[in-house]
Length: 192
Image (cartoon, rainbow, N blue to C red; front, top):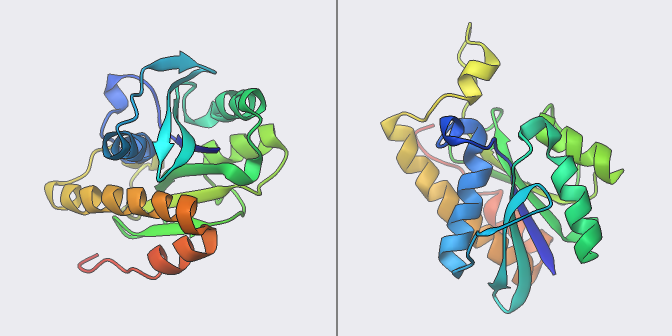
């Protein structure tokens, strides 16, 4: 069983912001694989279903970004899912808009959601898919930037990034993390 967790902040005011692209990716997976996100458990909105013949859990923690581990750790414990079968999807301001970076493990890279999950799990050995939301403009406050919305041009790139994220998740389940990294990390977005 795999657990896909998209990071974001709950409540309407944060919908469609840069920081909530993890939530959007989970919605994309939910739509593509017809997995209903209706269960409220483990401080998350969740759904269980099948992806490419494998049982999966989809989760959008409702703890706010910097407390994501409070949802993820009890969920993995309850379903007896090893950290190696956890895939966390989040935003990354160090990548161009719409570009993916998949890693089998690693540091939090300054991302508070990842930092909290690592702290709660006691390991950084879980898969993460970072979706580029673009670099913060000079003289902008970081919080204002990541809690802002995408421009019209960026919205199309993000729709494509969500589709590619769904494909990357399918590749992880069917062919493994190495294949997913080879296929999706090498794709560079044009006009960014």
